[in-house]
Length: 236
Length: 275
Image 1 (cartoon, each protein chain N blue to C red):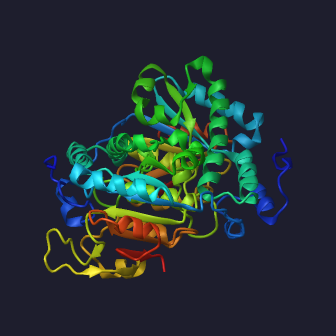
Image 2: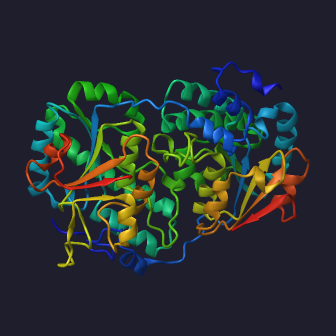
Image 3: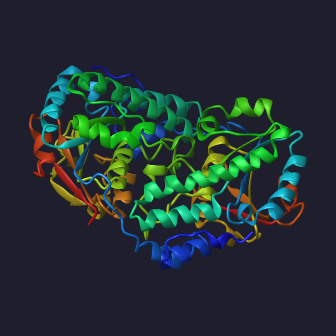
């Protein structure tokens, strides 16, 4: 059979020298996108007292902005993990189970913002139709957990899923070339961030800095998205 | 709210999971005590190469299909597919357009899907189905009914694919995708069906000085600093942390009988081990 002619034709993609000739700068697909990653444990587990003021703040930020809100899993994710591990289920299965809780938190947030045109969308929509959805809505909500699931990496130590919601939000923000990535936690230190994000920062094409803000502090998310010096800046 | 009162099995791991950060070192250590069951312990995962096999057409694929049909009488098989020359064309185009790795990952997945579709039609009369990601929970039924099932090998990372240090080619492609299925399901073995006898010190198609390596550890391969390796490099890193599938075998599917012998545990190609 013949090959489709291309610079990569008949090579294994494993030879560094042969892959290099097609190296080009990567475009920012959605340069106006703001990504806000909202912690499961840090925000959602605190319930109404944390979530309602944050939803109000996010609502006020909607006009003139395109927001992708990504949610973490929190305490129910931990519970399903503990049941899964007790049953002897492998990391990839546990990762799939925990990601469901991040989805549920996303559904809750989207419901609060529904009247403002915000919906929960699936991973498939985020990956393939985000531009269309954000052309008609100021924001969408999805699960921060990346779709690694059964294809989760075996961890270096132990059995906890390697790619969780902090890493998922980072990979997505970088792939779209988003202008901002803000992590909403219950403290503003860099320690609140998954160390994997620091590692990903070193190879990212666009996202070379992220902000970690305390979402329990009124105005912190707004300041972070409007160029203020809120929270902690974590750079590559 | 009192978030810590949900009932869960009482073990140290449980109490740490309910109280500590996911990055807590004690929690991470405790998670190592969790048992890990092999979900499909008697299944062999085979990866049929795209460029190295399916792109060769009937001359390569038809005899392999006959061999797979014979093997599945006695061994349960999960058959993953690679991408190949169309994936390379699409990767090259997308890279030249400045598109991000996530887009390349989506496109590569579609090509592996085409190869799974074609293999599926060839094996349909033998009762072998193609399973999509959503049908994986029904895998046990398919394997019981027909002894084999086909899947597209690309991992579902899509826009969440890790980016390489250089360039935009997705680092985790169909070799990693198939192996991760084997590892998560705790399968018996992982065999890569290619058009070469296994690992060489250089690309045997372009370098006549290339010599064959029958067995090597992951560390040995990384140390050799080979310009070209027969499997995706990041797979070697993943294998270091494997709980179940700590060795893989690369075999030449163009030579009749080698795939069957590899499934039966014979050393007929290159065996790569985690340690």
